[in-house]
Image (cartoon, rainbow, N blue to C red):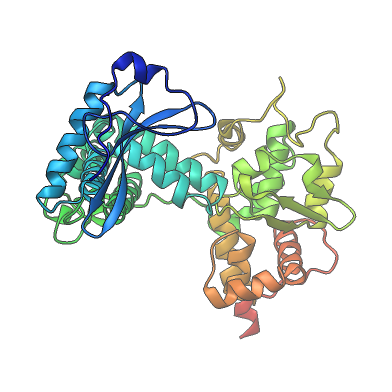
Length: 409
């Protein structure tokens, strides 16, 4: 016959400090466990089926003696019904965890997605994601429970910019779709993705191709470019020289205005623009023609920037456009339009392969060409092209030979 343990009082339990297991009576198998560190907790030692279980009932003194006895009685009642209290508790905890997960907000899931999925992207791409979600999505659905977000909610995010900023609207929809897909994968929500386009949002929003019309920058006929450059060379000031350098290198305005001396390798006649300043998020090397080098050699070295503004800092894009305007060419071209002039000239007046001029413009090229480009950035061929371009514009260049395709036929 099992030994009947005397039922201890609360004061007696408080004095139990020796490490080990102490029977406290009142319910058979109820023990107070004391560790070597002095921590104390309640344990119910009982047979569950053919296995002996030590069932935790809570810490002491947060769980009082009376509460421990009540929990022990309930556990033993479950055992008599054929229920394992430990397994039942695990199921309840799992259900609670799942329910809490389904109560995660879009903002919380976005943070998880950002930390898990944006680790391998470029710094610029990551910042684009953060800026778009923070600016457009979070104010509308940031506090919404992710499992309850509907197509109507996504529409509310997109509608304000869908027709006014169609490119951003399309990117934002794709990003929200990926975040909600991530939530489904983490079992925070179930069902169809409310941000998907086909057979979903396409029923209520116009196709971006119907609202997005590309507005090309005005560009000169390339035959007029030498005349423009002759007049440009007569203009003074850093803005005029920046514009001249931009045209000679076929670079974007922002790349030139932000150019620094440490990006220039005069010995190798190269300008290497770091990825963070490039639209494609990749370093871009520009072979410098003699004319482009002459522009650089004429600039003062009293600033980190090659073409600083008169009062310091970067020139504005409007300052370069103002040069064109003062030359009375503003209704015929823009700063960016000269990149189109370069492309037209390269296509119509030279025997250069198309992908070479695309690389010179820092455009994305096909997979096979890209792999070849990665093995060799084709500097020699691009240097020849830039020298031909410079000579076409009226500069003296060594090693340049413009090939007129009409004359070659």
